[in-house]
Each structure stands twice: as C-alpha cells, then as structure tokens.
Image (cartoon, rainbow, N blue to C red; front, top):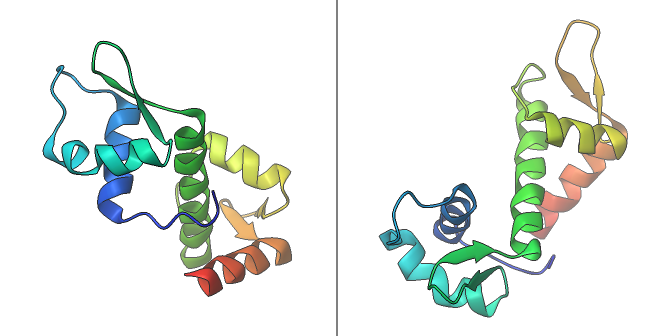
Length: 120
C-alpha cells in the first residue's frame, strides 16, 4: 500500500465515499475515479450499486491525515489536529505535547517526515 500514488482527485473521491453520499447517485469526482479505486481494492460495490470504503481504503485515508498533521505541526505547532490522529502519532512517538499548548515534532517525527518527502 505504500507504493500507491493517488492523485488529489482520487483522494477526494475516497473522502466523499467515506463521508457517505446524501443521495443514491455519486458525484462526478467519484464517477471518474471509481474504476481505478475499485481495482486497487480501496472501494467496493455493494449489490445495490452503492460504494463503500474497504479496510485498506479507510487505512489509506487515515495515514494521509497523519502525514498532513505532521506537516501542519511542522509549520505551526498550534495547528488543529484530530484527536484520533493525535493519539496515533503520540503513541508512535512522532509528536509530543508542548507546555505552551499544541504539539512539537520529535526526532522520530522529523525523520518520518523527511522519509515521506524523499519518497514524493
């Protein structure tokens, strides 16, 4: 799963599917990307024709949110980060709480961020 190179449009489609559609019809973004995302086993079609994220798709979106949080904390230590992402990154020793509020990247977090940047 590390080697998947998805476009921003494909990530938007996954996020739309995760949130759930308000109607039975999918939007244009999902329509353009559904075949590839289904082939990568990130989404699946139900018998009713509706789309749902697979476990891999949900994991991929969560990891993307973690990377975005690391970048946001690197730019601004007071950046707002979701609780589940904070819990995960803290458990993995990538971030540490600051006394004045917010979070700071640890050496391990900076190393991971550098690895991610090198892979892109």
